[in-house]
Image (cartoon, rainbow, N blue to C red):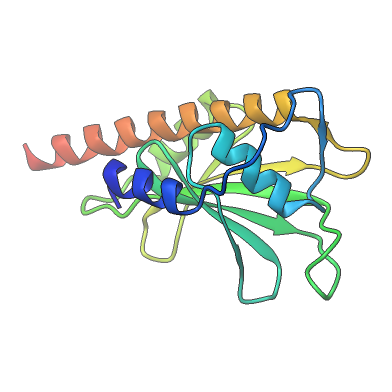
Length: 165
């Protein structure tokens, strides 16, 4: 999905609501509020439920579709304790393990791995237990992850360009 698709998804997923103040506290037990803050950041924030019955949010990072997964939830999908920001990029020319390791050594907080097809997956875990994190701190983490996703996209493009030579 390109940037136009992400914008369209954001518009469809964005009910009119008052902004959540930057000083408000946010927990993983509030998936609708997390989705609202994601939309405040100008990104899609479509609240869904994953296969296990836990909340998830369809969003985007660095121009690619991404997801926010909720973890450590009760059996009924409520009272989650943490989230994972995640984006994957399908590639023709696969990254090497050395490239993945170099990325992980240079970047803090997010972790790059390869899926079963050898495509890169970038993930960033956040503990969001009560009493919570401020909306401002969540926004900073979201933006930092987006910057790291952008760095990953640049690395993938460079690797694919080098492989074509």
